[in-house]
Every structure is written in structure tokens, then in C-alpha cells.
Length: 182
Image 1 (cartoon, rainbow, N blue to C red):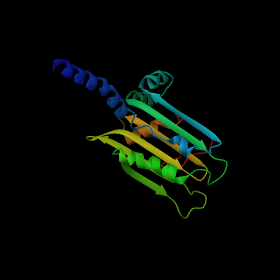
Image 2: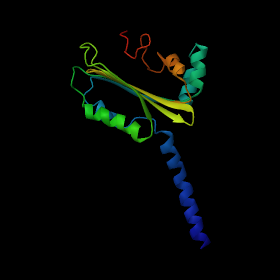
Image 3: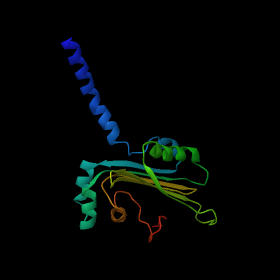
Image 4: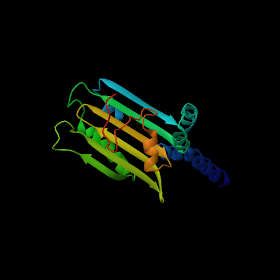
């Protein structure tokens, strides 16, 4: 009987790190390969806490350094397509659904149906832990570009502004989430 209990306890103990790890990386988008399948340019990377701490040594702005010190990770996905219609909107919708299914709050959808020059869509998802913002996802999709930035860690809306231009996060003009051309 003791041996059976010991085996059960060891089995549970062996599964705990797997369960904790699954919870820890739930902010990283899944199946981005389906979204970027026909991209002519693709960049995907994820920085964990250790990599962010190392990169923070090269940031000169103290406000940005403070923000980065509070982060656990950043995942950036940038895709450019040769022409409109080369990515499957259903694949992008599946990524949105992942965040919804994980309990993230869909804060903003910005989409212009009347502007022929800006037919994109911007989505912002926020994850709360009690009253704290513990993660944010910004997804920008236009007919030829997709940018998804997922941030894990304690932050404020002002913190998001400090991260522009760092870790592959594009700079945005003014108060609008429309990508600036370099």
C-alpha cells in the first residue's frame, strides 16, 4: 500500500512541472505557421526572462529598462506577403480564438471599412491577474502584413509605449496603432 502511494505521489510530482510550464507559456500564440504559410518575409522569435535581462543591458532609456525588468517574456511575429489575399483569415481568427479560450479579455478591435488605404484590423487582448495587467497581445493585420506582439509580465498602457522600437516591436505614430513606414 505504501509503495502504491509513493508511486502515485511520484507520478503527480513528475507531472507538475509539465502543467506549470503549460500555464507559463500560454501567452505565446500557437499555430503561427498556418498564418505565415505563404509569407515572403517572416520573423518569429520569443525572448524569455533571461534573454530580456541580457538585452536590457543594451537599452539606454531608464523608463524602458524599468518596464523590461518587469517582463517575463516577449514573443514577436512579423509576416509580409507579396500581395493581398495570401494568408488565410481563418488561420488568423484561430489565433484570436486561442486568446479568448485562455481567458484573455478582448479590449479593442479597430477596423476601417471606409478607408481604402487602411483596410487593416487591430486587436488588443489583455490578461488580468486580479487587478493587475499581466499580459498584452497586439495584433495588426492588413491585406499584406501581419504583426503580432505578445507580452508576458506586469505592465501598464504607458509601459507598452516605452517598448515601441525595442525587441522587434514596431514604432507606431502618435496615439494610433498604425505601423509607420521606415
